[in-house]
Image (cartoon, rainbow, N blue to C red):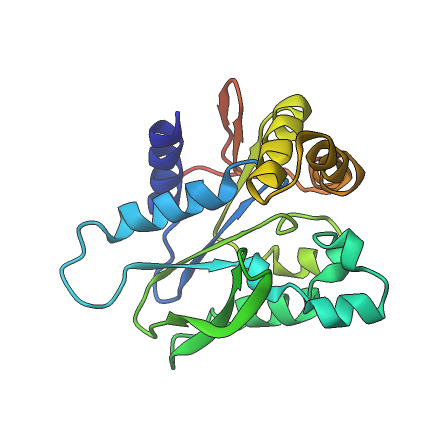
Length: 223
């Protein structure tokens, strides 16, 4: 299924490629939906047959714009990490809009899950790279600041398994990070799952929606 989904996303990007400006693509979805893996695979596929040292596509994840844990602590938000208010949403949207310009190289932060912090300047975007894939939970949220990028995205993708599947994946994620099954389930149900429900409920319709059991391919306008 991952391979088929990747091919569908690549086909969508090809059909929406912009002429004379960067093609910026959004891959959104709730936590543990598989959007990060999908986005990474899409970028790897787009770069697989490049003939120069300049990447044809670069991945810029929203997670790099997490607020630092020390900031979250001062705002009593550390236990809510991952919710919209725990990101520099305005800074993220400004940076993504800035990627429309190809006049100079730009640098973006990357989130290190093991260290639980963002690393500044870890992602370089070459000025000649024509396609940017942006990945994150809130990219299609119909609220500010996220919706200010609606006119920036040439194509949008939404990945959303069922809530039961998300619950299972989120619990396994926390177990992987050292929590016992009971504590992992509590972390999943008290913070991550409500975030997932928010993303599913408040996100705008995407051009391509990928679900657990089926794939719906809906284009906003003709190729």
